[in-house]
Length: 276
Image 1: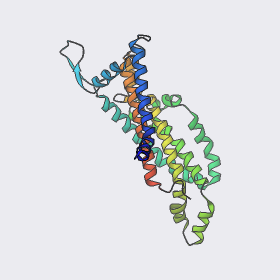
Image 2 (image 1 turned 45 degrees about the vertical axis):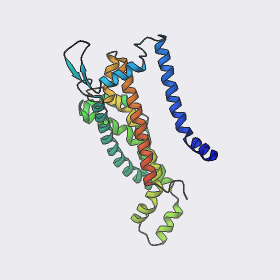
Image 3 (image 1 turned 180 degrees about the horizontal axis):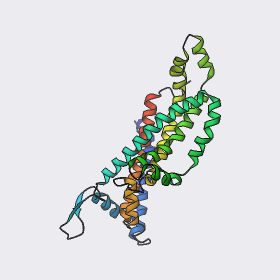
Image 4 (image 1 turned 135 degrees about the vertical axis):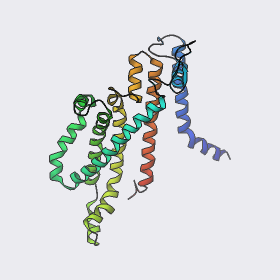
């Protein structure tokens, strides 16, 4: 009985450690703000951040004692800002996956083309998003097209590079064995090359999602409302620190959940990963 209980505690220990670290962080945060070591303008209390989060998701008086009611922040609820940002990222990411995997396959299967094209992809990968957002605004205006293009350009290089690396890492003996057994080149690509490269491709998608998510604030700097990145930026310029921190927390939690979702999908579609 003791052994079983000990085994269960050991199995849940990582989760308990995460919970403990969060509780500890909240306690230290509360203690610092309660002692007035730091001005509330720079670091509001956890309660103030929670109140800002609630106000951003509900309808409330615009000021204490006022009869005027406002809903959310910047005319949208916070969850609407978040959903709009997720929509933009989804569109940009889907386009990046389609283009990145296709081009990555071409580059991986044709080394000569890869040597010619890969320097440009690496050049694009190294550019910071703010470096070309002005050019995108000139080309596409300040609407959603610019934001989606920016997110696409952030996600495209890592997906392409990971696809190329995955194809280059395919065991050629397996491909030759499939061909010798009568498989066509298309069948060899679909049933040998693609499954072997899929772990690297999914890893590239995971990295690209992180890049796109960290680019969302830059993408929404201009005419980004509704958008969680734009809300975080505007609330900061208005010195609404509690709402800024609430947005940051929401952005971080959403990023963690997105990463968890991609890892879950990876385990689902690649059950053979790590097995030879």
